[in-house]
Length: 486
Image (cartoon, rainbow, N blue to C red):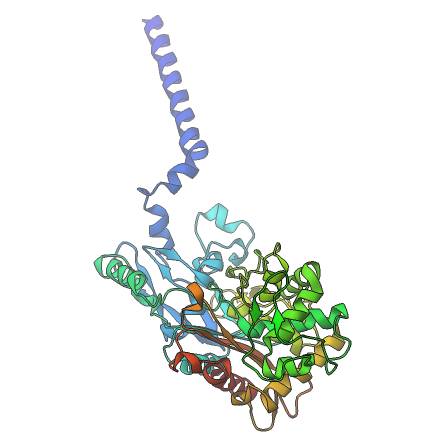
């Protein structure tokens, strides 16, 4: 009898040990894979069991939460969703998150450890604090001016404060309402299918995720490279550009839409957008000089975050001399996002120092309480010498006051600009993109307050009449006027 009890006790101990081993396996070894298993809805239920933190613009909440009374309880809502969609992105119970909703998801969802009042309390309690708030740098009047200016046309606007790098406006058009993607079910899936199938690509963030050939707007970068390298001794000196100008190593003659470009000065070439002069100067700067110059402005940077990822703007690092000449006027394989070209304008406006662009001003606990993170203003690069920046400021002012950018002029303010019309498509058959980059300074300010880049994909004018000065400059002027009023 005692022998049977001993055997039963041993078997029970063995079973208990097996149970403990299995518990360790489930709780520790396999907890990660079980938690991430799509069939496990505990994480989703917990994630949407409390209202999400909000994104704010100028102290006003542009997001909210709605009680759906379903298993995934709280759905995201958006105030003026299409206006701010290029900033917020979407938070969807079905399709995840994008843009600021994604980059700041730990804060907004309440999983960020810094939200806890007591360190490690979240780990011990297995709970989560309320989601925090994200305060952006966007200014409502500037954002609205850009959105209204585009008027539903395909294009984008980016506006920066040159002295700090704060992003004042970020607009992509046409836009969409991210609220239609917040929930689950057939309506959400139908909205997703409709938006993805739309030929205008409303969910594409053209301001930071799309790159375009910048055309003549890129000539500001080439001018900075030529002045810094000493290829041009003075902006008003003749450049020795022949007429006609034949691309190096070829028999191809580069055409000029402007008159009087033969042996023209850099000042004249910027004012009237001479292709020949700027291509000639880019070829003289050389591959190494142009490569270093574009890097200082942010081209080819694959790590730029604002905090959302920014598509890298491209300048090829291996080119033949004729390709380099074309790239120096914003053609060949050169592409840039609107944010990148706003950075070019901001560097000129800020005396050559380019500040790192940022979209989030600070992150706080719910209701604007304790600040848990505040990105600091920092320098990105010294894009050019201060003397070069001052010369380019003068040349960009001449573009607006006497050249191709007259539509951007603002009474009582100093405005600098550069137009661009970018050819694209097979044999340049596509509708040209209209570009305008600019900066503005009110008469009583000590430095420029705003730098802007505008691109319009589908201008209304007849193909031959499409231009940055005619189609993009009026939009830039409206944005700059709103910024100066701020």
